[in-house]
Each structure stands twice: as C-alpha cells, then as structure tokens.
Length: 130
Image (cartoon, rainbow, N blue to C red):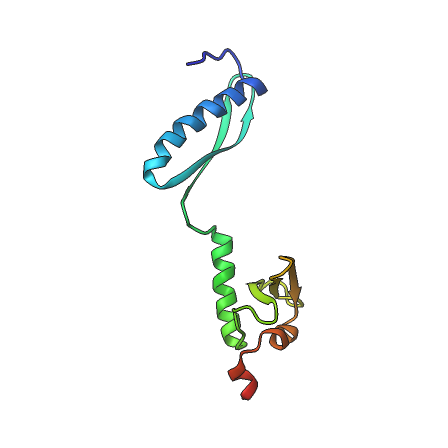
C-alpha cells in the first residue's frame, strides 16, 4: 500500500492503477466490466467516476435506437438485411429530414438518408408488389 500526502496527477495515476486492479479482481467472476473513469482532485480530496457494465449488454442509447429502427422500418416495410451492399443500422426520430442511417458494407461508412430514399434502397419485395 502506498501512503498519500496529497493528491496530484502522479498520485491519481497510482491510485487509478491500484483501484483498477482491485476492481478487475472483483469483476472477473461476476461477469461485469468495471472501469475507473474521470478523476477530479484537489490537494485534499479526489472524486472518482466508476462505471460497471454487464458483459454483452448494449448501451441504453444504442438499444433505444435499434428498437426505434425496428419499429419505423416495420411501418415503412423496409428490410433490415443487406440490400445492394447497404444495411439500415439506425433511426433518429429527432432528425425529420434525414431520419434513417445506413452503412455501406464494403467500406463501413455511415450515411444518413431521407425516408423516401430509404424506401427506394431498402423496400421489401412484398411492399413493392402492393
């Protein structure tokens, strides 16, 4: 154990490493990932941000975006599979001009598009027949 007289950058770095080692030892068998985040300090105290996540769980924002995409793609009868090298990956309800987000599979680049272009790119065969 290290004895600290005051907090500075070097002391916080040492504290972070020791704290992370203890958290890693605990997190391993529990199936969690625990990480030490920001540290704000003065000479006499330090505030530490610690984040714990269950392995394999999606972040809240990503999960909400996926649910929204499934809902709106279902309404517009759009395919979530790869179509002509493009795949729908997101829907932003606050963006009224370009709400859909897709990825070009070959390059990995993300693009946003209008609802009408999304229907052109990702219309399911059943919706074309109607």
